[in-house]
Image 1: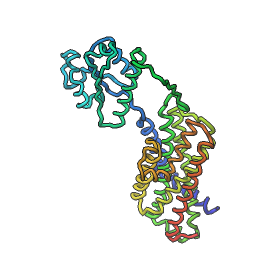
Image 2 (image 1 turned 90 degrees about the vertical axis):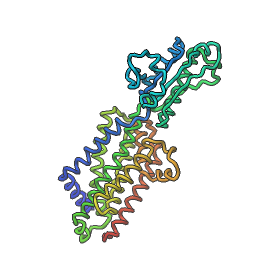
Image 3 (image 1 turned 120 degrees about the horizontal axis):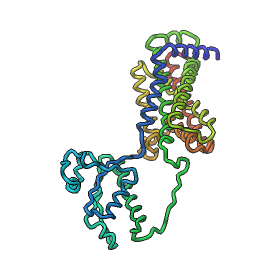
Image 4 (image 1 turned 30 degrees about the vertical axis):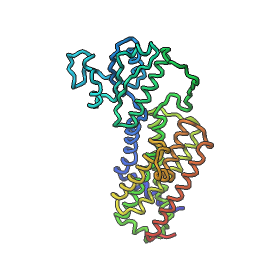
Length: 381
């Protein structure tokens, strides 16, 4: 135990003397928190929409107003269209609304026919043409569903629905009734940051000893592979805890996140997850020969899997086979469930016992793999 603590103190002393490593440990996670926290948005808003109203009736104008009253669409100012002459009247300027889509100025166009109100008042079907830019499949689906829902709501509220709905669903959103995106994005972002940076720091520290040749002193000493890994791991576990407090503190301060349940479970899960991250960094450091390959390995294996295969942005059910199998061994996947439970649901042990168990199992596997790799580097127990 004394040799483990001595190795830990030595690593912390080296860490404090390296200003570049200090910046890597705290400045980059903070920048990552700001960029991802503000840049990632799951709901599309302010979609540019142009409307061509051939009917120009009170009913068609009410329908147009209802489209923009959703606050999801943004009307296109026809005087800003570069292919139109501002001296023309609005009717002639909107004679070809599809040009706005072709030029990328609008994402959708709604064309109301001349007999719109007459057909509806006579209980006939009136067809409204909607053109949607399908270059972005997700946005196209959102635009289509939003316009269809708005149209149904307009007809129902205006008393124009031909057949009354037989079933009315009253939807209640639990845990996040205001649909705040920060409650989903920021807790998930904690997992990405705390998986990448602690593992990157310890893997670089491990490889640096190989490049400088100081690892030979360890080979010549009586220090075992487990003691070396535990000493280095303990030092960077403490650094990881500091990073977690730093990142979560700023996350709560900037986005106003509050705990939904007992924070003790988040504390326990964070310690286990940081141990997994440190073990992963040890494994990369043992297997790598230089810092360039270390950084590439952490970025490719660690960052991409934590970002794309953890459920942070995309639902796990959307991951195709066989990548869906890989997601089962991504520790960030299970830690995201713990953080979102702590900040959103607050269910406690009944909801997160399995993610806790998986983090423990994966951490033991990673540490054992690092130990086996280091034993082949002339270190033995």
